[in-house]
Length: 114
Image (cartoon, rainbow, N blue to C red; front, side):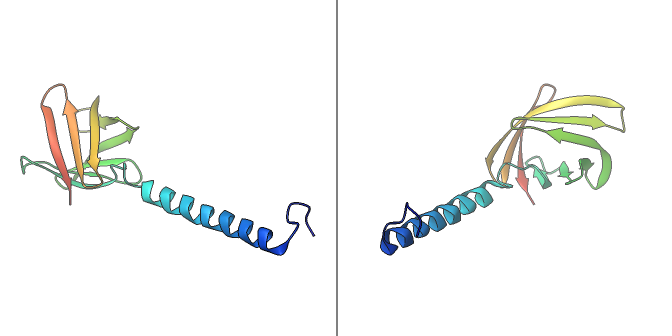
């Protein structure tokens, strides 16, 4: 028998604690995945702009492929292929379905996931 488990009850309880901890950590990690992701389709509150950010880094505007993007925790870096121009937006995820985008030219936009 393992030196750490001098009796079967302690060993069984330790295994339960480890299993429950692994399950809880897994649930927390799965809950975080995607919650801050901009990947998906978004509609601006002005009802004129619909953006899609694909898994493979393509930026689509109103149904037309427009360029590419990368992002980190607070910034979206976009290459606009239509105008051969690079720019960046600051963004904040309010929740998994609401995003604020801050631009230097147009101010703040509110996007809802569609």
